Image: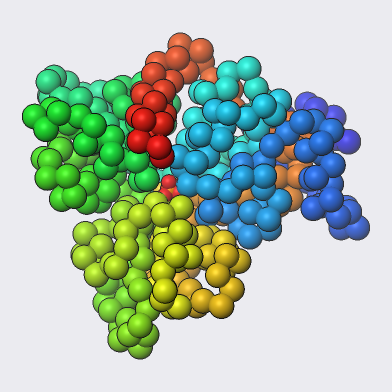
Length: 334
Ligand code: 13P
Ligand code: SF4
């Protein structure tokens, strides 16, 4: 064991514990042992690397993960995802320890909405209600009336009277898609996800010509032009379910590549083709999600650091709109 002050100073400088792990240890077995010893649960998002998904107790989309975090009896929640997800778990569980393998695992979409700027923007629309996508900071949540995710956004909007004026933040692509679906005219904040904006309509169209029977399935964070060619649009859980239930055997998957692991596991006889980005980079891998590794996950469980710590006043203000989301989702059986 390294002394705790060294652990803390390493985390302060790089966001995680960058020490070598004895190569002879079985990390998978050690993680299982730590889970039992510490009554810890590992929650993972579908965009995590396959090894992390395989050690997780629950894998899900943002709504599923928040719901699991709300109901868990574990003492420690190890969140294999990005910062806003772990922060949401902490907001719902002030008495539990919430760990994030790499504290620097952020989100470009969340970063596109700084609370100070949003507060000024919101002041221009005093009669509007604020619906905010869960991909945002606690500061943004505290300025919101209801939080939503890609799997419940439509239902949440439709639960409000038609004449209700709404600001939707921070994702302009998801907001535009929802405006179209619900016939509303929500005011949109100009934010976006760097991963979902990178897909190339031209390359997807060429792929479709080569695989004419393939279904194009896309996440609603993608740009409108890409969504117009999609056969199905949904959250990561929605995309996964569709790929299982559809009679099609080939799919062009327009979202972060991590989801392909579960798709392939659940439907081994089907073919999943990751949609290409608009240049030759691997930009359809989220650089934030992929900061977490199995080694960092093991170390954070062993040392119980990095931990999410929150100001209590901010936590309480951010909890209100999350509670509203969870309540509405329950009403609709989501
Ligand atoms: P969902 O898993 O809720 O669809 O969200 C996708 C995403 O981009 C998470 O960062
Ligand atoms: Fe954020 Fe996009 Fe990465 Fe999701 S995929 S964590 S929205 S940057």
